[in-house]
Image 1 (tube, rainbow, N blue to C red):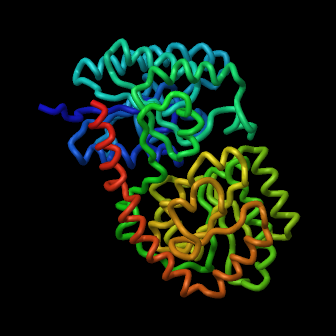
Image 2 (image 1 turned 30 degrees about the vertical axis):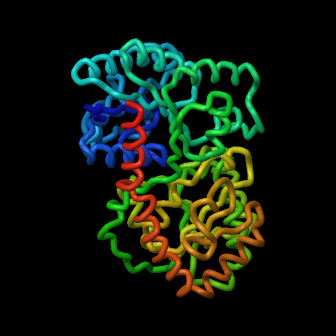
Length: 399
């Protein structure tokens, strides 16, 4: 009799169940797998909440949309740096205990390690092996220093450590083929590509609300090394006078350094009365904000980091029926085409971006037809149910 997938868990450091793109992805594929009769868990190996940001409405453990989640006793980490440093080892130990306890209650078939820090990979890979749990490394970006410092590669010693640890993995799940080539070239282990996934149910029944003024919308974390929103601001400034009835709203919480730079760009472009930084919003508010927009925009620089990733926001944009404009980086064109599902423009070229904005504003009915087709295309190819079933089949074949 063939074995049946019974329980899978994810280990990560992302806030749960509220967070940004990574959290949304985890919820989407676990929700889909849960619907197929599999128990699902998330182990967060350290606190994620800041003391001065207000208390989360969620506890340190619980159930969210059928997904069990476990923090190491607390969601909130200490305001003292030395205590955070010492506490990490305690939190790792508690997380190991949580995994052991849950595995004892009911066997965990797979632990998906959604983290590329070498110490975390090493500790939890070998802990899972002791518990006879299969591990899968799941990654959606290149590691540091490519991801953080925009380097072209990582040091050789780091490659050696990755090779040593990753050859102990059962298999891999990657966002792009480029990421697979980077991590899996010499190992040649079984892998699964999960480019984007969208919980389309979040957007069902969301109706466009009347707005005092039309707005184009960016939604993300505004981390400039990943999303160069300054490119969009400059582009918008070229056409803003031609379309005085449209403003630009940016949603996200950039670092102080990035925020200062963005504010300077707004001032330099004389856009203080047309471009507005709205800050971070609750994930439950995202569908309505996107749906109300006149145009959804994104911009990524042509970097090694962008080459490896895939914008999660693309799926959310397509789910709304609102026209979307993105830059041509990474593997986007493997999945969508310019003028068919979305609109795509050359990266790091504000004039080209401005020309595309002008075209969309002046051919808006055409853009709406493209956006409506995008909804259908997304539902057929990247809805959480469709993507999760493929992931379920991959995992089932690894039992």
